[in-house]
Image (tube, rainbow, N blue to C red; front, side, top):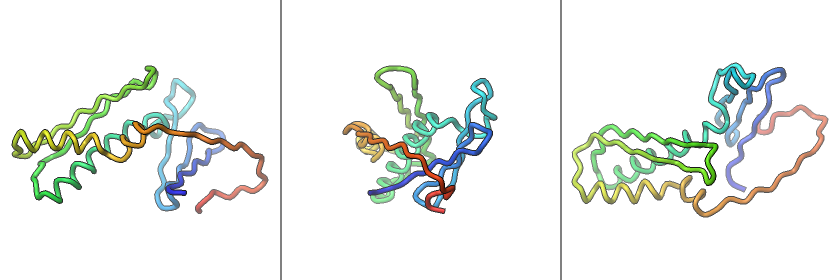
Length: 140
């Protein structure tokens, strides 16, 4: 297997502590109107956030190999998580001094971010629900 993300519920709340690949921790929560405390993003909000970060990182890494000055890179991802099929609108803003041919290439690079490619290629799910009597947080 590749990367493992583990969510552990925080008793009495809708918060989740997430451990990513045994190295990084983050938290999710639900908004107040859904009974949460609104102390972090809701889980579905991490999806467009991850896509924005992936596109930005992919562009910056590519530009470093070409020694292109992108300036400030800002990637906005708008997502209507209720639409079917899901729709993501990605807007990339760059402040560097770039030629039209560079912008055209960067558009292709942005479309090749690994997260987007995995979404486009299709996703398969397998679930297992089990009753456990230990209380160990996987990975830590």
